[in-house]
Amino acid sequence: MAFKTAKRGKANTPGASTRTNIASHGQTVLVLQGGGALGAYQMGVYEAMHEAGVEPDWVIGTSIGAVNGAIIAGNPPGKRIARLREFWDQVENQISVAGPLAWLGMGHLLANLQTVMQGTPAFFRPNPAALLGVSAQLGVDHASYYTTEPLRETLAALVDFDYLAQRETRLTVGAVHVQGGEMRYFDNRDEHLGVEHIMASGALPPAFVTIFGLTGPALQDALTRLHGEDATGAERGASILLRSCTTSGWRSSRSPDCGVWQ
Image 1 (cartoon, rainbow, N blue to C red):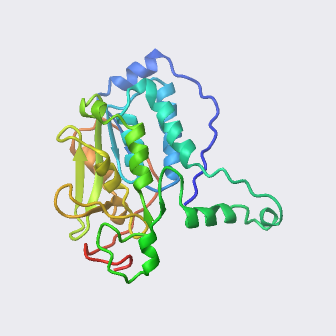
Image 2 (image 1 turned 30 degrees about the horizontal axis):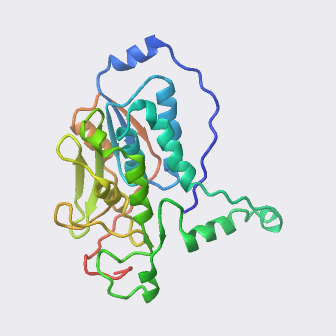
Image 3 (image 1 turned 90 degrees about the vertical axis):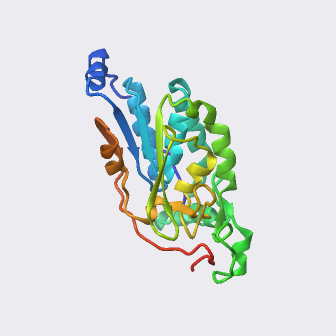
C-alpha cells in the first residue's frame, strides 16, 4: 500500500462557546477504523478537532486507527499533531512519476510496485521467509509477506507509553483471536498497553505477521471481521461518538500452525 498525505486548508476556529457546548454533552469519543491510507484522513480529522479546541476523552481504534489512536492518546495534546505528522511524513510515498506512464493514467504504478517490493519506511519491509513459498510451514510468528519490525521501532519512538499509562486519555484498541474469531479489546483503563497491543490490532494477514503471547491465543487485525468500535463505545458509556471511517470488513479464519495462505 502506498500512502500520500493530503494538504488541508485553514479552517475557521470555533470560539469558546462552541467548545463549551461540546464539552457540556459529557464524554467525547473519537473512533478510528482501519483501512491503510484512511489513516492519513484520520490525521486531518484530529487536526481539525485540535484546532477547534476539542480533545477526545477516549480514543477507540483498530488497525491503522489503533496506530493513530496510540499516537494521540500516548502524547500530551501539545505534542500530538507533531507526532502524527512525523509518522505520516515517514510513511508517505514521495515518488512522483511523469512521462508516458502518467499520460496513460498509470502514474502511481511504479510507486505502488516499489511499495510491494520494498515495503514502506518506518512501517513494514519484505519478510525473507516468505520466499520459501506460500505453503511453507513457517509458524505463526513468521507467516506473512512482510515484517512489521520497523513499525515496532516507530511506535516506540512516537508513543510515550508511560504517559499512556497515566490514563490522561483513555485508549481502547481491538484485535481478533486467530482461532476463534472473537474480538478482544485492550484498554489502558484496565491494563498497561505496550507496542505489542498496537501491533496486534494492525496485524493483517497474510501481509503482516500475527501477534501472539498477549493473552494466550494469537491475535490479528480486527479488519478480519466486521468492525465493532461503535458498539464498544456505546456499550462503555460514550456521550459523543466522532467516527472517522467509511470501509467494510471481511472475515477470515486462520490456524496458528500455518503457512502464509493456510
